[in-house]
Image (cartoon, rainbow, N blue to C red; front, side):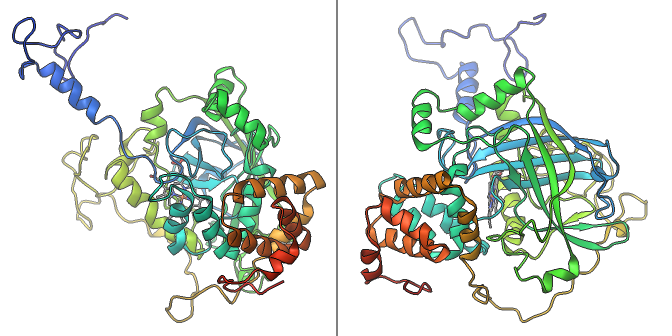
Length: 496
Ligand code: HEM
C-alpha cells in the first residue's frame, strides 16, 4: 500500500497506537491522550440497533434480466423489454433469532430484493413462504413477542410461541409450512422466494391488475432435518452466510426464475378467495405462473456492516407501474419499515450507498442528522416555485381505486375458512413429508403445555383428520384425550 500511515479520523498521523499516555512510567492515564479517547469513543458506538426481526442476514449484489414480455400488465421500466437488465441487492435472513443466532434454525427466511431501476428503487421485501401467520397488522408486534424471548426467563418459550399461534387459526397455513421439510432450508440458495402479498401492476393505459411475485430457485429445493441442523450448528453457526459468500466467491452464481400471477382488477370482488388475505395463496390452476425473468447473484459485498447491516428495505419503495393493494398487512408494513429505519439508521438512511438510488433523486427533504450529499447546495427548497425546479409528475398518478363501506375495526370473521388451504397443502405432501411434518411439529410444540398441544391438534384435525391424528400420535396423545380435554378457551374452534 502506497500510503501506510495510521491517522486519526481527521488525518493526523498517530504516533503511538500501542501505549496509552500516562503520567510517569507507572502513573495514571492522561486526559490529553486524545487518540485514546477518540478510539475508545468510536468503539463504544460501533453497534447500531439490530433489526427487530430478521436481525441475522446475508446479502449479495446481482442482476435481474427480463426473459418474457409482461409490459402489457405494467409500465414499470425494469420490465420494458426482453433482455433488459437491472442491478439489484438481495438480503436473506432468518426471522426470530438475534444478530448472533445460528443460521440453520427452523424459521421463515426473509428474501428481500432491492431493484435499482431507472425510475427509483423497488424493494420487494418478501419471504421464502407465499403466506404469513397473520392477516391483520395490529397483531404483528404480538407475533414477535410470542416467538422471541420470554420476558422473565429470557429463553425462547414453546408455550408463548404455540399459545399465540394456536389462538389464531388463520396461522395454521404458515405454521404448516414452517413445520414441514421446507421450514429449515439447507442454504439460502436452495429455497424459493415470494413477494407474498398481492401488489398491483399499472400498465401504460392506466389499467390496474393484481399481481403476486414468485422466485423459484434454479439450485433446486434442499432442506435439513432437525438432526442434520443440530449437527451442523454444532460445527458452524454461520452455515448460510458461508454458503452464499463462498458460492459467489468461486463463481457459482445462484439464480432464481421470476414468475407472476395476474388477476384482473374487477375479478377481485367475485373470486371465491379474498385475494388480499395474506394467509391464503391463489391456486395456480386459477392463476397460472407467468414467466418473467431471471435473478442472478454475482457479487459479494466488500464490507458487511456498510452494505448488509445498513441495508434498508421498505415495501413502500415502489416505482411507476407497481403499486400496493388493500392487503391490510401490506398497508401496515408501509408505515413500519421506514419508521424502524429512521430509528435504526437515521433520517438520511437513503444516502447510504447500498440504499441510494442509482437514478437522480430530487425530493425537497433537507437537513437532518448525517446529511452527507451536499444537501442540494443552493437549490430551492420549496415547491411550488417559479423556477421550474423539480415539479410534481401528474403523468404518474395511479388510476383511482374504488372503495366503499363504513369505517370500523372490521374483523375478518366473514371469512373463517382457516383450514381448506392448510388441508390442501397437507394432502399434497408425500408420506415422508407428512411424517417429517408430524415429527417437526411434535419436537417444536413438545415443550408447550398440554392444553396448547391439544388446541393445535384440533386445528390440524380441522384441516385434515390425518394431520391431527399424525401430530397427536407423535405427542403420545390419543384422540380420546384430545376430544375429552376441556377447560380452556377454544375461541371459535368447535369440538371435533
Ligand atoms: C424486516 C415490520 C410483515 C418480511 C422488518 C422490520 C420491520 C418489519 C420493522 C425491520 C426493518 C429494518 O429495521 O430495516 C413488519 C410488519 C409486518 C411485517 C409491521 C406486518 C404487519 C412481514 C411480511 C414479510 C416480511 C408479511 C414477508 C412477506 C421482512 C423481511 C425483513 C423484514 C424480509 C428483513 C429485511 C432486510 O433484510 O433488511 N419487518 N414486517 N415482513 N420483514 Fe417485516
